Length: 190
Image (cartoon, rainbow, N blue to C red; front, top):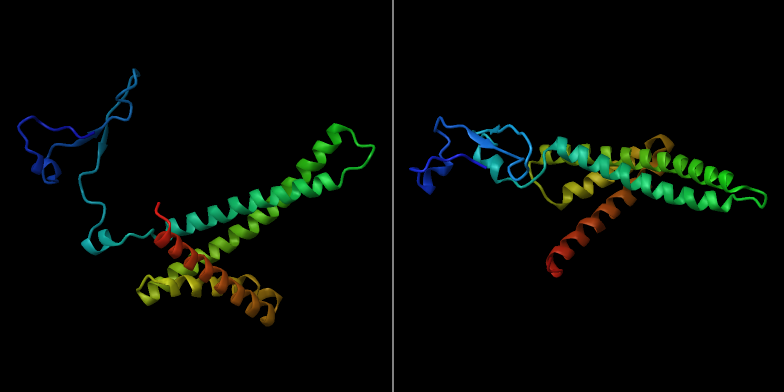
């Protein structure tokens, strides 16, 4: 909440040249001791071109894709670990031993798949941001090229053939995901 004097009109509310600091109180409605925080009065972006771009920065992209990849892999891996843990039950196992098998199997698979998908997200975010910086455009082809490069880099240690196949799969998967997202935006009113 900004602090305004009563003689100001609404047009000067956004005047950043005033010496009056903008204060924010996150605990306004609570009955607790609080302190006001000073909000910045300068614009967030230095140039208008940066302010018009509606895109995450490369660091935010990196954090987002890596975190989402790790989380999805950990949840999926834990689910497969749960199934394999239940399948490994033996007839004489106690309940404590069965729970231990499930937890060990889920933890092992969750870490394994979480790390794999986290690395894939890291590679994809880095390649997408790099391709966007080199081409200086933001379009679908950046995503497809980043998917192709991610698949190829992820499987590069297994040989050229495996890297080529994984690159093609990565490009197709990302192309389908981007196309599906565009169709969803176009045909589903949200």
